[in-house]
Image 1 (spheres, rainbow, N blue to C red):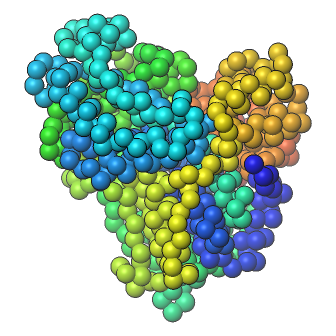
Image 2: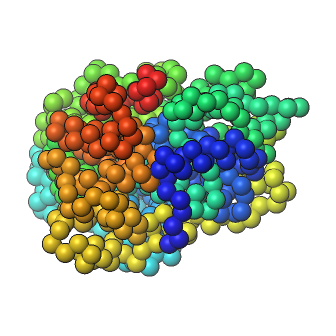
Image 3: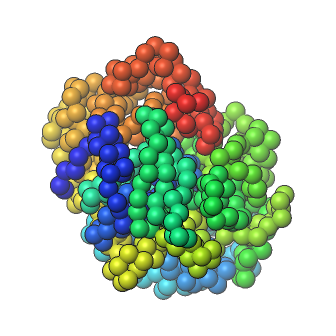
Length: 575
């Protein structure tokens, strides 16, 4: 893969100069999966592209998602076959274009009795699913990346894996496959780096402050550089507001901007310090109904998925959210309610509040529900608005992805609108078959063998696996970043070279950028004090921080547990 200029501090300055001096075809506001895919798609089509993000890349909902690539099996109950097919295609797209950062995940669904929740009827549903998704692995060259056919487990096979279910008297289980995103911030960063390779100019910590409007046409945005303090204008033929759930709040802070009202759901998933099974997830039924189901096999489910080798990721818990998106918090009462919901669905787990290590929460478009509702109607489609049609405001498009899995398709569709405005025609998107940065590899196994050969007896199998997952085909830029390839950060399994690479080549500007997004040190539980101190010293040396700034950065990392709210992600120099 051709090398592009690094995303380091020097390049950020060069990108800022481009953003201020050039005129672009498309300006994307946002740094989540939908925004990243829009910028990448537009750049691959030959458009001149800019992207700015108020905080760090992938610091909001895309980072704090449930990390599942949903293939759409539950849409069978809704008889929504179009959404099932779209979800299946998008799951396959990410397994294909980001093979180092995604993998298939088997999920067991316990069965009961002889009616709607029975083993035989789930087998029939699996047959329908198999027929509707026969092309699900098209274009996947590595067989290990494919989604296998669903299958049934006997009662004994289920209880061997999950003995806590014996008292519920299951008849067995069905197992279907979805995908799991191993590191969402790195996946988004890989898309952004692919966009820069195609010519896009990008900058994190650039806040869109005001739309530039001339004769009822948006001609760009005035932005604040939250790191350098400068205020400047970015000019573009089309501006795409791809800030996801922050889109209405963003417009609400601007003069002369359109007003949006989109129902939002607060979706929460928690990481607990236990592992049920290292390879297979478990789906359990809650007490809440699914009002959208046409052929219901019972109430809504939550999923308990293996995470990071020794944890379990449990989600999702949803509620109607009506406050400002920037003010999102998760309260202790909400956590206690979720613990009670989980224990009601799987009593043998006997989960306690102290078992929770990390809380992930973000906002997504929702269905129409009254505040406080329990039996919730969820959003069905991503939100795409051409403001010329709705508000008479030319040159402005808004996109809000319904979930992580649909981020690539959202990017494709908003760029279709933007390209038509720029060129009066639409070319074909290539992002469903073009590898992201680091994704042009024969297989994960091949990359791991390359690393073992290059660093014989130097890295543990766990380190080799993580490096191949995080960087894919770009692993050499990390191993050769200046530090001894095997030098660790304090008592952690992470490498000094990874920390330095994050600052020098990946535009990390804060300690949380490094530890929680570039290196995913904190997605299982809080790193040890020694690890945080050592990382802070390394980043301080790279960025020239004094002792006071270093201390504030450490405080920000520690304050991110169990939940890092959107408002806590501003650079500490401004907070």
